[in-house]
Structures are given as structure tokens and as C-alpha cells.
Image 1 (cartoon, rainbow, N blue to C red):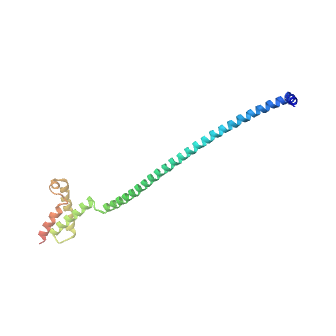
Image 2: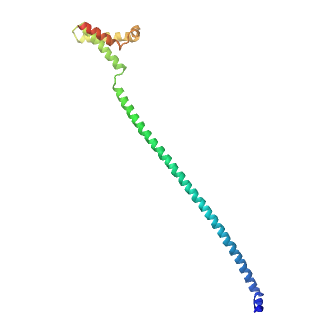
Length: 169
């Protein structure tokens, strides 16, 4: 039997077949090792990417919390500014209702004219017109001249009302 086996393995077809199978076996083993190495590299890369994804999720969660807190702060500030704006609008409306300098001047003018009219005569129409003209002339003197420095036009109403009370008695 030994001779038959030696005779069989000495045939060129068997030698070629055995060399081919040996090369195929070597290529298969190397391919298997390479596939195992690539799989372990892929698993390591997959673990690394999963860790990075988890880190990015944590970072995104933190960023979203910060952003939501910032948005809440901005919304609170907007609410406060709306309240301040509303209060300022109400204040402006109230200040618009208050008489201005020109209205106070006109009222002061009418007050002086009435005092002058009461001291002159009982006739109302022409006396009223002349009293307004006289009061306006007196106010112009007070605003432009030395009388304005000596007497304040709006503070004289208090002292003149005392003099008017004395005259009416």
C-alpha cells in the first residue's frame, strides 16, 4: 500500500492538486485571520462611536437646558419690559392730561383779567376785553423785564388772592 500511495502522490495531477489545496488553505486561514482582525477593529470603532454619540447626547441635553433657561430668562425680561412699557404709557397719558406751560400761562392770564375786571366796573363785555389786554401786557412785562426776576408769575397768585380777600371785605 505504501507503494500505491507513493505512486499516487507522484502523479503530477495529485501534486498540483495538493499544492493548490495547500495554497487555498493558506489563503483561507489568512483571510479568516484578516476578517477576525477587521471585525475586532470594527467593533472597537463601533464602541468608540457609541461613546462619542453618548457624549454628544449629553452635550446636546446640557445645551438644550442652558438654552431653555436662557429663553425663560428672556421671556421673564420681556414680560417685565412689557409691564414697564405699559406703566410708562400710562404715565405719558397722565402727563398729557396735565396742563402744560402754555395752559398755565393762559389760566394765569384769565385770573389776572378777572381780578382787574372786578376792581373796575360792573359792565362785563368791554371791561373783560380790556382786562385781558391789560393782563397780557402785564404778563409780557413780567416775562421779559425786571418784574420777572423780582416776582415769579405763578407764585404771585397766592399773594394776590390774599389782597383780593382784603379788598372784597
